[in-house]
Image (cartoon, rainbow, N blue to C red; front, side, top):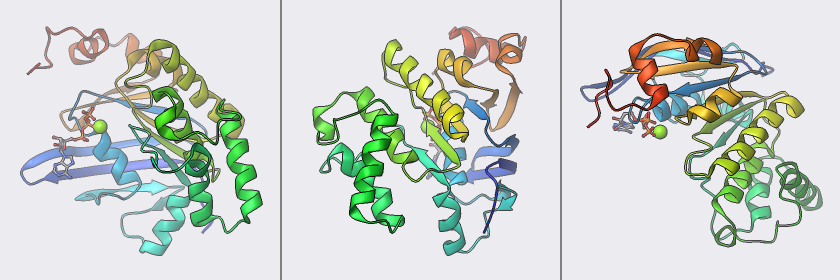
Length: 253
Ligand SMILES: Nc1ncnc2c1ncn2[C@@H]1O[C@H](COP(=O)(O)OP(=O)(O)OP(=O)(O)O)[C@@H](O)[C@H]1O
Ligand SMILES: [Mg+2]
């Protein structure tokens, strides 16, 4: 299968029991661009991301990866599509019993068929790319949260995917580390030309990295546009979310 690196989310709906989480979501992530999905807790951001890896199956609607609808693909064809995508998990989700280098080498060992020497070389080179030269021997428990996030990004890019999916990459990091992760996301785009879909509720980071912002609220896209357009939005829901005020249409329980 030879497919491109754009994403298209088409009229996606998903309920859990009687709870309608996604009520018809449609947007595109053009090849090489960075789209950031924002929205409050429980609005379905992670559920959306899980559909893109087909870890969840939609009730209706589909995801197109390079124009290829994925919901009805065979599992072997879906594995091929997954190989083209790197996922950076919220809590880095490293294997605690493996060194940083082994964490990055893991997907290469599983899928690349490369020889040991080549795997180690690529793992070292990828760690260097995220600013972690010479620390491959360390264990996850020996490094900071910010370093773990970088290793998570290194593991996601080790197979050189065309598409990167990030679930809240800067949550829980101090402002300086958040900026460093943002710079890394921008670098992945400029150096590797990757298409990125980022889930976030860090507005500062969102405005720094996004080409386009999608604001999810109550199962639909409440607003979308460039960072400038979202910043200038007069929608009271969007305004409240950006400002972080407790008073406004978004209920705080
Ligand atoms: N597997 C599941 N089974 C049942 N309900 C689920 C499942 N996964 C998610 N939900 C529900 O769907 C809703 C959206 O969850 P989701 O994890 O996508 O929120 P989120 O926008 O990522 O929030 P946060 O910012 O807190 O991570 C929540 O009410 C959640 O309880
Ligand atoms: Mg989430």
